[in-house]
Image (cartoon, rainbow, N blue to C red; front, side, top):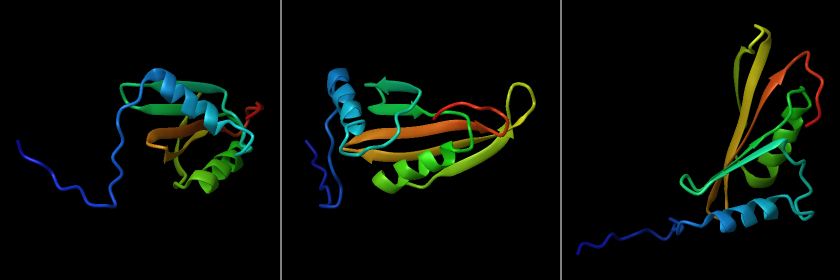
Length: 116
């Protein structure tokens, strides 16, 4: 059997069950962090990931910035068009929380009024 020497700066993460991942998501929404909650949540044990979709209005840029400030990560934006041909920006921030991959995203439009 061959062994792999793993450097100290690599954090080894064992796969978690769905209940464990859901518990981590709950921890992210605790009062300790005080961050806005998303409109939709997807959790995948296969990908060991949680994905959060936020609202459509331009204020969501600031919501994403709060998540990025708290957990690290860079907000990226990709301009495009929505189903009706209107302008939109797909905004995303990704980070790792206790070994779980987290992706927060939104499709932000200029004319849509919704809550984040």
